[in-house]
Amino acid sequence: RSTLEMVDFDSDLLSDSGLSGANHALPNEVVTKHTPVELTPNEESLIREQLARHYAFLGAEGMAELRDSFVVVVGAGGVGSWAAMMLLRSGVQRIRIIDFDQVTLSSLNRHVAATRATVGIPKVDALKMSFMDIAPHAKVDARVALFGAETASDLLSGDPDYVLDCIDNMETKLELLDYCNKHSIRVISAMGAGMKSDPSRVQIADISDTFEDPMSRAVRRKLKLMGIHGGIEVVYSSEKPGKVQLMSLAESQQDEPGDFSVLPDFRVRIVPVLGTMPAMFGIAMGTHVLTRLAGFPTEPLAIKGRHALYARMQRELGNREKDMSAAFGGPQLQMNTDDCAYMLEEIWRGKSAISGAIDKLTLLRWRRELPMTTENCVCMTKAEADRHSKLAGSLEDNYSSDIIEFVERRLNEEKHISTMR
Image (cartoon, rainbow, N blue to C red; front, side, top):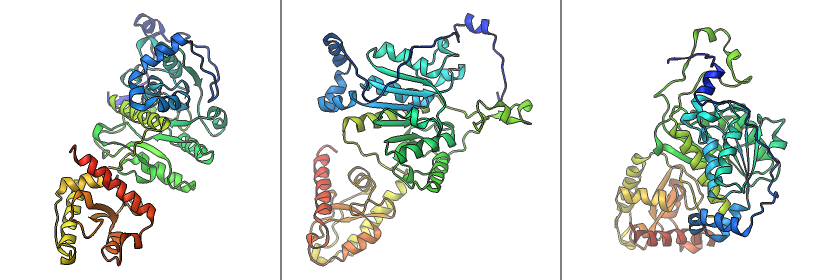
């Protein structure tokens, strides 16, 4: 269909088709960071076996932190349901899920717990029922509620270790991010998964480092007006928009489109969604959060599809080497374009070793007396590189011990990794 039409379903037809929207209300309890989780020795043994591969990966200490955590997921749709599900499967035992909406037929293409039997019941209840089949010991606080500034203090109470923002309404999203920022609550926010189809473009970055994504740009601009210039992690796609468009309204809806919105100020036109993309966003969020909670070191790259950048950096590196004086061995370039990409992304994480800047980067020798190889390659901004090339005296005379230690540690990391390349 090219238009969104209002369809009245016959309740008997839904029931006959296995689409039961009957009362599935579940008993609920308020869960906080301090809610006790009690397990018998036999139950603990089962859970340890269930999580055996995560124990092997994250270690006993990391898993203890993960299992002791409390996470709040706001928005239990295509993104939030997958994030919440994977956190529960990974060992999170205290979780609050918040959403005002119900499972619909269209939820079945992307919602992790949606089935024909759950059509018509709250999304959070559908999730909780699924959770109880996987981890019956878990404490799940399922809130059928609409998040807003006036409800934030209640819905985000209980000392959460992390909040996952999976809201698709702009104003509500901003209210959540503002509240978390003001109250120093760790938060990761999902940008738009709709109208996206390239899984290789899904990234995690600071909101200040996002690009190409219209929703990220709008959120970034509005946050700046609120005095928030960065420090908020987001999952987003750098895929250029425009391949598909919003679905058109039916002719009967065009005069008063607001009358057809689920709630005031909520979007009326339907966003086409490839069901796999919200799942990828949610799993990316869940993975990022569980590694943070477990203290497992990860450092997301701000990748920008920059093959042209790698080629330019290799050319600039060659030009710098041509100017290398004989006192330092003359030109000794032993790096190709792939090596430049590897050093920039894998070793230097797309940032200057000196300032942490991500713009106008270049590669050059760290110690001028050594050949230009991956074991002596540092990333700086062009201005920093120009100053570095003209240094008088030793590195110790010009850089702090912290910077020198940091660079040497990364170059030692390269030596280790290079044995496996």
